[in-house]
Image (cartoon, rainbow, N blue to C red; front, side, top):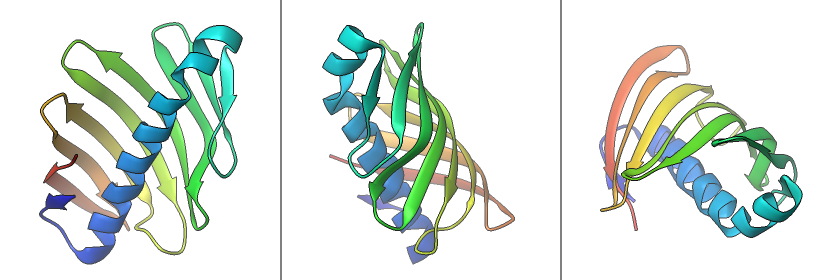
Length: 119
């Protein structure tokens, strides 16, 4: 992942990308059963066109909650992130099919707008 921001903010974005990737891997289970377990704990829950994230953990020291929506242009969502190794906060995220992303919101009480590349 490449982008602007502090090292802690970039670690937080890496958790966002890992969470989105795990949710995509679990999409077959979501379609079949309306819910799926996340990699290290928590659940993804189908909510119509959206996917709810309930205390999802894809790494040991970070938790993500919120919602993601897949669109024809990529994935958008609003996430709450907590954990000792990342910046705590709320982000609105947009990840495009061509590997670009934007996250806006607050991390550790400070407003942020982070642009990044992934994949």
